[in-house]
Each structure stands twice: as structure tokens, then as C-alpha cells.
Image (cartoon, rainbow, N blue to C red; front, side, top):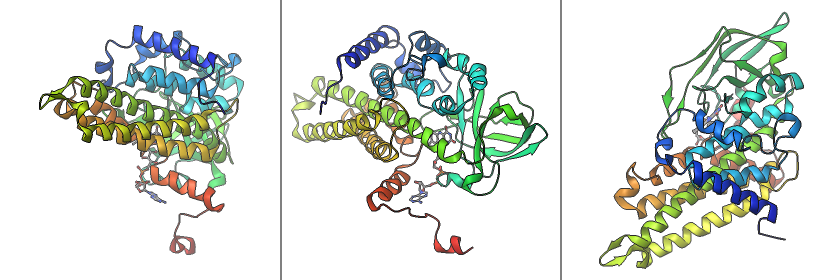
Amino acid sequence: MNFDLSEEQQSFATSVRRFAEANLKDGALARAHDPQFPFETAKLLAKQGLLGISFSEEDGGAGGTLFDSVIAIEQIAAVCPRSADIVQAGNFGPIRTFVEYATPEQKARWLPDLLAGNTCISLGMSEPDAGSAATELKTSATEDGDGYLINGSKVFGTHSPDAAIYLVYVRFGPGVGGIGSVIVERDTPGFTVGKPSAFMSGESWSQLYFENCRIPKENVLLGIGGFKKQISGFNVERLGNSSRSLALGRYAFNLAREHALIRKQFGRPLCEFQGLQWKFADMALKLDSAQMLLYRAASIESGLPSPYNTAIAKLACNQAGFDVANEAVQIMGGLGYSQDSLAEYCMRRTRGWMIAGGSTEILKNRIAEDVFERKFDQRGNAARAG
Ligand SMILES: Cc1cc2nc3c(=O)[nH]c(=O)nc-3n(C[C@H](O)[C@H](O)[C@H](O)COP(=O)(O)OP(=O)(O)OC[C@H]3O[C@@H](n4cnc5c(N)ncnc54)[C@H](O)[C@@H]3O)c2cc1C
């Protein structure tokens, strides 16, 4: 068992870090406080080959591995935390599910602009009454001649105010088996992107409304029976979420470390106080152990990652990222709590990832199923009887 990056991976990491230092270091703080999708930076990353890293060359990608995409997030986030969102959007998010299941025609239509950083795609899964219980979604797709009428609403979508296309989970019929997904273009009649709201992180999201929104059959990504496939694709999104959680925790850790070496109180640098040294030891333990679980889950040559390895990696990275960023704010005192430093940004962002993409509680439910080799129906007896 080898715990080091291979020579090839190390040289990729070095080249991404050099690119980030040269192009993203300046402006990192300003980018973090801009709620809009950073299209100009996305175009720059696209030219550097950092979008579609693990997609086949035929699909316009670089033919790399999922692990390479994790390395890219780590190296970009180490210099500019906000720009890691672009690596997520171009490699791990709904774009990854799209590439896995889209027809050649669908890919030809939408992928080039997404991979050039000209547009972005948003995932419409959560609904006002279906969050953790995603399979209770109500947004419907009803056959209408050679197309479908979409009716319903979606909430909380990342990049929803800025996206050009939306990967929308819909119900073609009853039950889990009736769930599939469609692509809806932003300017489709009957589709409205609501006024932006803000998450605690400062990112904006818009409620999506579908009122007899008609899409052609060619926009169906996964028809009846597509839910399981979608969730398999979603495991990649979860690893992007995990990678950013960990990378932002590490970013805050490094800020706090530098601060503790320089800042003096009571005539001594902060790093000489044992109460703070122990905090750093605990933080290092959390980061390093979560890193191992992330690398285990991402170490696949092809295909989609294992649901168990993904769930346990995301849980560890979400918890480590937030705990460490939170401690970094504490260690940096008033400066850590101020928007002049990125420590508080890392804390706010990592907090959201404990909810997004499968909350920490839902991940624990998933892990417990493997522990007991049983499925646990989360609906109570009363609901089952009803
Ligand atoms: C930063 C961010 C980005 C997001 N991006 C997207 C996106 O791009 N697309 C999209 O569709 N959605 C997105 N979401 C929405 C996200 O998927 C949901 O917020 C999440 O699934 C939880 O749903 P909910 O908010 O409705 O909470 P609820 O499902 O109402 O849950 C409330 C609380 O109860 C807990 N809980 C629920 N059921 C159980 C259970 N069975 N056992 C134990 N605890 C339980 C939850 O863990 C949570 O703590 C995003 C959310 C955030 C915060």
C-alpha cells in the first residue's frame, strides 16, 4: 500500500499549483465575496484543461481520472478557495451525471459551452417538500405529443441564478421507479428562475418554477427507472463536495498556523501556548484522517465511486473541514472573524456542505445500512400503514 501520490499525480499537482499561484492568488478574497458564478475565471481554468479532467477526450475532456480532479480541487483551493467551485462545476457536479448518461446528440449540444466555461449547469433535485427524502419529489413530467410538460418547483440549486441549463429530477410515474431526469434550458417558456436568495456562505440560489413547461423528448436524460443511476452519478458530486470541505479546512488551518507563528500576546508567539498547540494537533488529526478516506473513495480507474466509501469520506471531510475552519477562526481572534481574512469564509462554506449533497445525518443512515447489511426504511410505521 502506497500513501504517496504517484510521480505523474505529483507533477500534475505541481503544475496546477503553479497555474493557481500565477493566476488566482491576486483577487482570491474578492472572488470569495462575489455571489455570482465566476465565468471569467472559469474560462481561464477551461483553457488550462481543468474542466472535464476525467471526461474522455471524445467528450472534450482530458481523459484523466477522478483522483486527478480531486488533486485539481486541492491545488486550486489552496490558493483561491472560491475558484475550487469552478473545478467542482466542471468535473463533479451535475455535469458529471450528464456526461455519464447523455446521448451523443445531447453532449454535442451542451457540453462544449460547459467545458469552455461559457455556461454552467445547475441541479434541480430538492423541492420545498422533498429535501432529504428526495424520492418524495413531486415535480412531474407528463407526456404531451412528442414532448413532456413539466410542472412543479425546485429549491436551493447551486448556481441556479446563473445557469444556462438545469438537470431536473422529475416524476414520470409513481414510486421511486417513476423518477427520472430531464434537461431544461433557461429560456424555455413556462420555466421561471425566481429572485435570488442568499445562503449563509454568500452564494445565491433561486427557486425554480415549472408551469406547463414543454420540453422535447430529446431533453430526457434518464427516463422511468433512472433514479438509481442518478444517485450513482451523484456520488461523484459528493466527492467534489468532500474535496472542497477538506481543502477549505486546510486553507483555514494554514492561515491559522501562519498567524500563530507571527502573532504575539503576553510577549510570546501564539504557537508557544500549549492550549493552542493542542488545537493544532487535533486539527491535523482530523484533516489527515479525512484525507485518507477521501483518497480511498477517489482511487478508482474508471466508472463511479462506491456508495459506502463515498458516504464515509464525505462525512469525515465535512466534519473535519468545518471543525478545523471553525477552530481557525477562534485561533485568529478578531481577524479570523473579519471578512478581511478568508478563515470566516472557509467556516461558512464548510458549514453548508454538512447539509448539501446528503446531510451528515443522511450519510450516517447510509453508512449504518452497510454496517448492518440491512436497508432501514426512514418512513415510520404510521406512514407505512397510511
Ligand atoms: C450549500 C447548499 C447547496 C445546495 N445545492 C443544491 C443543489 O445544487 N441542488 C439541489 O437540488 N439541492 C441543493 N441543496 C439542497 C440540499 O440538497 C438539501 O438542503 C438537503 O438535501 C436537505 O434537505 P432540506 O434542506 O429540505 O432539509 P430536511 O430534509 O428537511 O432535513 C432537516 C434536518 O433533518 C435531518 N433529517 C432528515 N431526515 C432524516 C433522517 N431520516 N434521519 C436523520 N436525520 C434526518 C437532516 O439531516 C437535516 O439536518 C443545497 C443545500 C445547501 C445548503
